[in-house]
Image (cartoon, rainbow, N blue to C red; front, side, top):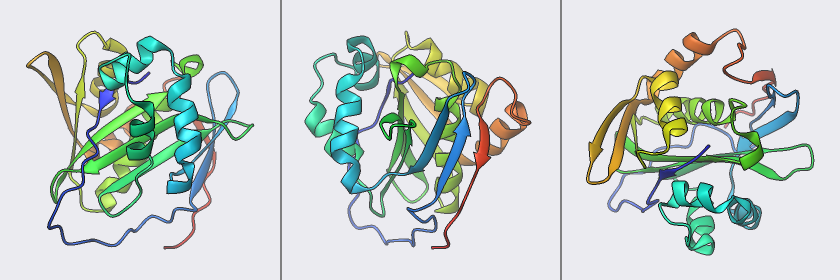
Amino acid sequence: LGGTRCSLHLPRGRTRRPLLVAVSSFERILLKDGSSITVRALVAADELALHSFLAGLCLEAQRLRFFSAAANIDYAAHLGAAADQQHFGLIACDAAGLIVGHVTYAELDRESAEVAVEVADNLHGQGLGTILLARLAAIAEERGIIRFIAEVLPENREMLQVFRDGFGARVAFREGTDAVEFATASWRLCDERFGGHSAAVPQVLTSPRSSA
């Protein structure tokens, strides 16, 4: 699962808003196959581990994620690990501490942000991408962002289905890619549709929070 391109650029001339979600917050979730995954906020120190994760994706997954099978992974990992007032990301780690999922956004303006997500090849279909997007959308809404946008290749039907079914996204074909847009508040829609820890999403086991 993956294939949303995010430019991760830094807007200029922005008034900074406080980061309301503590970077120490984490959740432990149980995937549909029974494996346990920890989801936490990404920090700059995760760049090397993120690089290993992105480099380990199969070539097709890299093509769908970066729109090229010859992506500059060094650059992608550096931008993907950005953690400041305009960028925020989450990572999912397995029992060994290895990254198996990553979702991030980059603010475009005061109310919009571009979102990108990828999940390890062997964890497709486990609901991890959905829960990462839902958690990130809730954080973005808390920070004042009201919409997420993304670019997805039309052949990436799995990613488009996640956006449509989980978040009620609007999708429009533009210049060779599908432009996706959905409200960050739609994390609630996702929770309503797939609540009760149905087969669609993993089960949240613990959710410790630290006050910011």
